[in-house]
Image 1 (cartoon, rainbow, N blue to C red):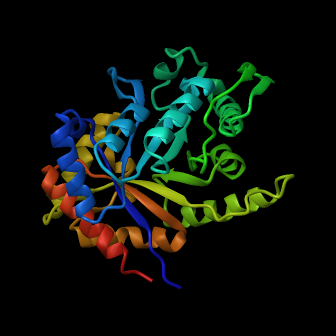
Image 2 (cartoon, rainbow, N blue to C red):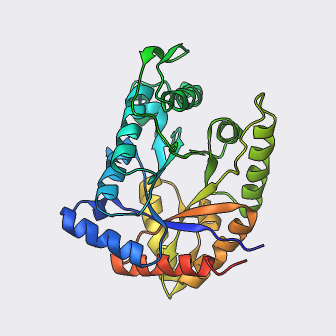
Length: 311
C-alpha cells in the first residue's frame, strides 16, 4: 500500500522577525520547495527568558501566505486559560479557515516557566485534560457551564463555532500523554522516539480510543513527529549543525538525542525518516538549525520529495 507523509518546516523565530513583504517571500519559497506546511513552537519564558507565542506566530504566518497550513508543535496549553484560547482559535479560524493544526503539550523542561505562569507543575497534566475537554465543548458555539478542578465557567460562549473543527494533536512521550491523545486528540505528536516506539503508540492510541465509553474516534488518527535534523554533505558538519543549537536550547548533551536526530544529506535524512512512515507517522515537522535559509528550505524540500516516493 502506498504511503505518503506530509513534511513541514519548523520556523525559527528569527525568520519571522522581518518586514511582512520579506516574510511572504520566504513563505513563498517554502511552498515552492514542495513543503506541505510550516510549524512553530511556543514558550513564555524558557530558561533564559526565551520565547515566542505560538498562536501569534501562527497568525503572522497565515497572513503572509495564501495556502500554507500552520502547525503549533507544541503550544503549552496548561499555561493558559481555556476561554481565551478558545477565542484565539475561533479568531484564527475566521482569518484563515482550515489552515491550523493545533498541537499541544504540557511542557516541563523548565519548571520555572510553568510556576511563573501561576501553574503548579505537578498539576499540568490534569489541567491539560480539563482544558482539552473544554476547548472541544467551546468550539461547538454553545454556552458552557462547568465547575471543574481548575476552571469554573458560567455560560462561557464563543462564537462562531469551529466548522470544520481545528485538528488537535497531543504531544508527549508519557503514558498519560498517549492516553490524552486517544481521548481528546485527532492524533499524537511525538518527539525523540524510535520507530518501534512510534508504532507502539499508534497501536495504543487506537486501542485506548476504542475502549472509551462512547466507542472513541470513528475517523482515522493522524500522527506527527517533531524531528531535529542537520543537513550537510559532510557528516561532521551536518552533525554540528543540529548538535550545537539543540544543546544550547535544552541545556542537555546532544548524545542523549542523537539516535533520534538524523543528519547528513537530504537523502540520508529522508532515509532515516522512512521507518517512521512505515510505523504510522503521517506528518513531520523538521527542526533544521544551521545553514542559510535557502539551503535549509531546499534540503527540506528534497526530504519531502523523497518521502513522497515511498510506498
